[in-house]
Length: 305
Image (cartoon, rainbow, N blue to C red; front, side, top):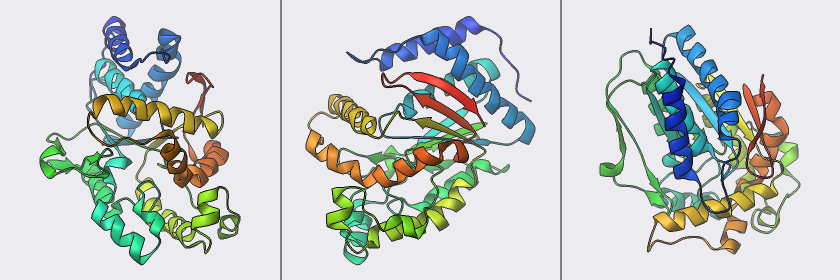
């Protein structure tokens, strides 16, 4: 059994230091200590209880729209789990399991041209992802490699840039925009919800294939999750707003590489719109922890289901 740590001052110091590193002009964190006490520590305690009960690696799903802050929250939880409970955490994103550009080009020719654009279920290497989670959960552990995807070149990184996990983690935080998503009724797919669907998926081939993937391969993956945390945006328009902010951050760290324009971002999120809207409607049903995010990008309320 892991040993608890009670030095709150150490947690507070590391937490505030990390928060400061994430702040950008016009996007400062509010009520930092309040959010630590009211959100992050209770969630960390829930994760610790799950780990203690099952006595094996806990898989934590962290889901929410683009740019909502999944990576930031993942790292905050990692700090607390280490300092308060001495738990080792590995974080990775479903985005890192995107299929290669070559594979998506093949899908775009054989199924639908829309599969060239990464994002929707069907554009991930589900076999690799499933096997990775299974290996992380197993009692007998040997080192594994977690892939990395470079969004600025829209392709998987070479293996020498992949993440090496040499020691069995106590907790895995598996984050992504569609983590935990459920399939819709086929009848719900008929009506287009945006210009992308109306003009470029007239025969519903793309929508139906995505739904099929969710019903089968993705369901199998999401069933491995022990606790699902869902970050709920006020409305879908904030996904666009915060995705633009995310792109600006990427621009600062990816000098000389291709970054999307505002117009490109607007079309890009149309690929995510149907599933995101469906998840917002079903958020209370699909999640173990529901966190509402306000219009100022701050944690507003929390509900343990």
